Length: 141
Image 1 (cartoon, rainbow, N blue to C red):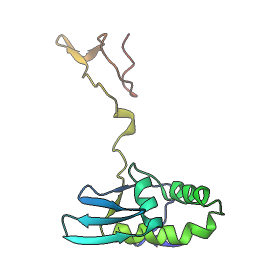
Image 2: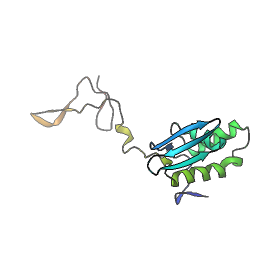
Image 3: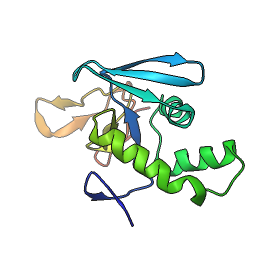
């Protein structure tokens, strides 16, 4: 088993582009510019395909699967090269591992804090506009 940034490879950890990288397409290849390091990188056709697929966060597993479907070949043929490419891009600060959310149960569009009854601070008054569900609260009706 290999490593990425001296860590065991997690084929299901989301990876994404860094915001400080801009690029331009050159036919089916690309030129990247790291605005923080003032460094240019050239991507061949295969690297550019990976870069395009990373427009939204993706996993190593997904990248290997897409590549094997694109070239109609067995995934193990591309696995080592893709892992090496991602590892190199992570080390050069072109890509990053997507941080996991702190508490997935609290990620909702609308969070309205419960109202406290001033006469009984332990009693929560549930309004009709609660649009969330956690272990402590129920969805309002």
